[in-house]
Amino acid sequence: MSVSEADVKKIAHLARLSLAPEDTARYTEELNRILGYVETLKRLNTDAVPPTTELVEPSPWRADEAHLSDASLKEAVFQAAPDAEGGAFLVPQVIGGE
Amino acid sequence: MADSPCERTLTEQLELLNRGEISSEDLTRATLDRVQKSDAAIRSYLRVSEATALLAAREADARRARGEKAALLGVPVAVKDIFLTQGVETTCSSRILEGYVPPYDAHAVSRLKAAGAVILGKLNMDEFAMGSSTETSAFQLTRNPWNLDYIPGGSSGGSASAVAARQCAASLGTDTGGSIRQPAALCGVVGMKPTYGRVSRYGVMAFASSLDQVGPLTRTVEDCARVLGVIAGRDPRDSTSSERAVPDYLASIGKRVKGFKLGVPKEYFIPGMDREVKAAVEAVVSVYERMGVSCNPVSLPHTEYAVATYYIIAPAEASSNLARYDGVRYGKRAQDAKTLHEVYEKSRSQGFGREVTRRMMLGTYVLSAGYYDAYYRKAQKVRTLILRDFEAAFEKVDAILTPVSPTPAFKIGEKTDDPLAMYLSDIFTIPTNLAGLPGISVPCGFSSGGLPIGFQLIGKAFDEATLLQLGHAYQGETDWHCRAPNG
Image 1 (cartoon, helix red, strand yellow):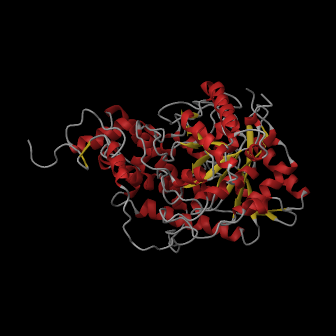
Image 2 (cartoon, rainbow over the protein chains, first blue to last red):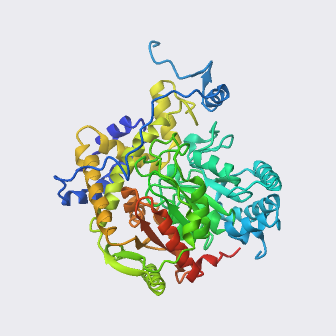
Image 3 (cartoon, each protein chain N blue to C red):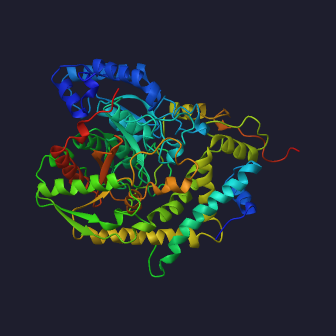
């Protein structure tokens, strides 16, 4: 399987990345080289092999309990944000407008 | 320089402190002085926190004066910039997190602090741990202390170069496909990736959650055992962290190794690997045999598929984990974004470098509608085959002996234009992550050009103690780990 420049633009959109036009060709070429390499897995018949979904040992279960953090931590979280006000993250208007 | 206390190993530094021959404050000042003199050339550190380090050192001295005992009381260490550190900027070597100051400490960092370690600063790495040479850092190039024209390995390159250059007694790194063991080998220090689940990843920026693990880089295996004992153990904040009790690693390391069985897999001695690396690792076999350890051929037949498997699973998981960097909750937001969609796209495109962008696109593609079965599910099936290879081998042997990297360190810039060549440099470390097993890298020689070479021991799940015991025994018979780079 290989990807076209149109595919790469679509992938970039899905990943919320915008590529400069000159980069699209380069990423297309690089992705195709890597995808070509991972094709080697096709040589293996894995019809009867289960996928690995858990490693080493199952994760221990725990009760789904809420733990309250202290108020100063909340303050610090919002301070680290690019734009926040009154305990909320600010973003450009999403609904309505022009 | 030979009489500087930072020349001493972590264990020796603890002895000096315990005997009252040096204070933590003086030791910390000597190490900070070493950093100041050497780091203009090597550039291991992204940030040095001199004032808080000296405060912590004085606190350690006060604790010791009160008669308190703690495993790392007063010893200067440093951590990869992937670990959150409360009040200290943490960037993962990415522009997208420039200026981000975390509100809390990673679990491993709080364990170090509780054990009395003095944290000197944050170490350079490949951006979001994606790379094998530390060249994808958005901020600086780190150089190999043994030869400044060469890379230190990666992604925990700063963690390895700092320990090699005696800029700290020990450091923490993370290992997703070799990112502790490969730079440790290339810088001539010890590095361990513990079993998946042995150390909590809480507060460690996630790259590939089914592969990531935290571990120490140190000068000796004994030092490694000390640090691992501090950071290992259950933490309810990382649901994958194991409830198994942490053994006393120091108790096991002095024991005799006679009678142990090592496996040597033929698939790890491939055509095209460096001649001197091959010879150095083969010489390790002789050292073990002299100690009464038998070395037996074993086969791990699916090894050749590990890199391809990894380059599906790791980017897929990364594309999901890194979706959180969207210019809303932390780090930098693009200034020219007018809509929410533009906030996402512009912040991410301006904030991420080429390697991270490439891997996120690869990961998004292999998870996209219609391709999941062909790539991700297929890779998870091959992963099962790789796991079974190890299970079969461990029925016959106690640990597996391999090279760490097919070559010594390469030159800065040599592989930056060829992502696939860079990926293949992790061919001997990736299978361990896919199987969740522990691996340790130990120095075992030098190339004719004077660059370090390391060997790897891979163990059964949660059997770090055997790896440490075997590694320590090797260091008792050899002195590669006693050599220091110039300057």
